[in-house]
Structures are given as C-alpha cells and as structure tokens.
Image 1 (tube, one colour):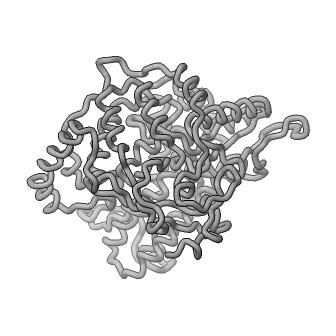
Image 2 (cartoon, helix red, strand yellow; image 1 turned 90 degrees about the vertical axis):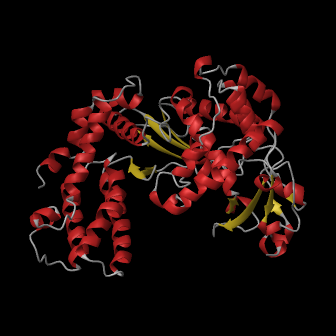
Image 3 (tube, one colour; image 1 turned 120 degrees about the horizontal axis):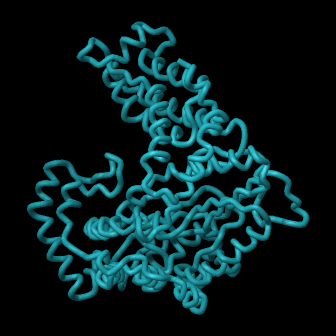
Length: 491
C-alpha cells in the first residue's frame, strides 16, 4: 500500500501540531517525557511488596502449554487442540525452557522474537492523514506470547498488593463489576440528597501507544517486584523493532519506537492493570476538576500520557454555575455510558437492558440460519445469550417488563414462532425429566444480581473498599429505587 495514497502528501499530523514526513518522525510521533517530572514522581513511590513477597521467576511454561495457549478467559482464544497440547509439552516445552534460560543469561531475545509486524487499520472516521484515526495492530511471534504469558502469571500473585482496591479490572480476587455497583450507588446517593457533584469520565489519548519503556521499568522497580523480574521485562523490550506493513519500505529496525508493541492477548492483563486508560471519578466542585487535570498533566510529563479532552465527558448533578466554574470537558445532559452500562438518571437501567437485548436478538438471528435442534438452541442460550445478559445484572436488576421481553425472546428463538408448542415449565426441565433443558434466563439473572449483592456485603474481605462501604449503607433504598420490588412480583 502506497504511503502517498494513505497519508496526505506523505505527511502525518504530529501531537504537537506540526507535520512529519520523515520515517523517523512518523514512528515517534508523541511528545517526549519530562525527566524532571519523572524523577519527582518516583520520589513519592514506595515499594509495596515486602522482601519475602518479591516476585521470583520460574519455569511455568508447561502450564501455559497445558492451557492450550489461551491468553484470555474465553474458550475461543486458545490456539491448540488436545493433540497439539500433547505435542507441545513433549517437543516445544523443553526448547522453550532452554530458550528462556538462554535469554536470561545473554540479556537479549533471539532476532525472530524481537520483531513485530504492525498493520495500520483506518477507523473510518476523521482525516486519513491524522494518525489518531489509525489503529495499530501488532502481529507477534507465538513463542514471545508464551514467554510474556509466563510473566503475566507471575505478576498476578502480587497484583492485589500493588494495585489500589478501587481499581478492580483484571486483578485476582476483584471484579470490574464492583466498580459498576459503586458508580450506581454513588449516583443514587447524590440524587437522593441533592448533592452537587460531577461525574467525570477521563479518556487517554492513545494510552498504550504512549507508554515509555523506561518509565514502565522504573514503576516495576518502585513497586519492589524484584531485580530478576524487572530484568526479564527489560529483556523483552531490548533491541525490539517493528516493520510497519504500510510503511515497510521506509521503516525498518528502529529502536526508538515508543509504546507497548504487544497489545495482543498475551499482554492483556498487564495492559489493563499497570496503565490507566479510561478513568471515572466524582468531584464536588470545579477546583477539584482543575486539580485533577493538573495532576494528569504532571503524570503525563513523566510518562508520556495525555488526556483526550474531546472524548472525555462530564455529567453534572445538582446546581452548577458553569460561568464561574467552567469545566474543560463536554457536558453530557443525558445518560453516560461507563464500561458498557448506562448511568446518570431515570431510564438508565431500561436503556442498558434494551441495548443488550438488541445485541442478543441479532446474534440469535444468525444462529437461526443454522437450523439447530431444540437441544442445540438450548446450548446457544446457555453459552452465548446468557453471558451477554449476565453482565448487565452486575449493575441493574432485571425489571418486570424486561423479564417478560427476555422470556419472549427465548421462546421465539426456540420455536421460531410466537406460539409455544410445549408448556414452558416443561421446557425448563432437564432432559432426564422429559424436558429440553431450556434455561430459565430471567430466574438465573435475578439470582446473579442477588449473588452480587451477597458477595459485596457478606463475602467481601476488603471492608475498606469504596463499593462495600457505599453498598452497605444504601442497600435497601437502592433496591427500592432500582425496582427490586417490581422484580420480585414479576413472575
């Protein structure tokens, strides 16, 4: 693909507002980090792990191979079947262990592991000459992913100690849905007491492309993760280079590339937990928001991060004088979507459910083209439709009208007609009891919601977590306002 046809005049718009046409400037388009700010930031960073908990490296490559190379939690993300797993353990495993030891001794990876292929995908919005409108996809060596997964597995055991309790995503023992409950209950508390507050959703501009490798290494050392672990991370970023498929004839073996070049599955856990992307917070006045922005700017000078003001937004509650307390973000008058769920006012629960139901119906339409048996459709409902709906229950209970819509959707999918041919109570029975094992999705979703409430209030070991404190105080009024009484009598 010709550069001149994709980027206007062979140039790209750089973050500082200038235009770049040289290959070196096209690679390193982001502003450099401020060494002084970085030094000041690390002066306040203290080790979070005691010496006995320092991460030790070891050979757990075989465990990764036994998992089928699965780097995520979904069943479809593995790349090996059972036969390939056995072959990998017998043949690939010993070679990878030998490679692992050799890398630590020599301090560098082999040439094939250090190269990545970057494909640029246009987002189909904005000007093509603006690099912000292009999405880089890194294609990496599978051996590199296995070794990176070993690092992720080692890091998991320490995540709970070095990451703040309010950050719940991808930390063992925590759930991102705790943040949903915290946002929901905080908004309810603010609304009930007519408290002036602003819900601010910050979005980082090219969050993971801007990560400085030096900054990342200093953070790992500052948290006390151990010299051996930090050295191994350094090895995985030593003398790496990428070939940009769009600019392959211009760019080759440039060691100055910024950003984490491994956004694939093997680094998913590290990417989500060690560097902030989307941040949601509550503020009670404009000065707090300005102080927040100053803190983000100082952090950006040290790390290279930058807040995307255009994509960030604020939802205001109570009385605000925007003339005297202006906010630098777009003000959202309606509902706000956070982590895929709508919040911010009446109708948020219904909109969240209806939006998710529309996606489920669309997928069921594709499944209907396969002319499945009833048993096959029951399997689709359990393994495809139910998980899609389950996520919403972590924030909003199943309202009565939504429960009716879910039941109608389920049995229309089963019979491909609005006329039931067998009693629904019979269809819900197991096959050993002369039923068809069609899941009772509304009942299951209600159980998921109750389980989430019980887990936060009774089973939560971290009593200092914000979600626990807010939820315990406002449990009953929140249930009433969310329509729990209507749900209880909906059957």
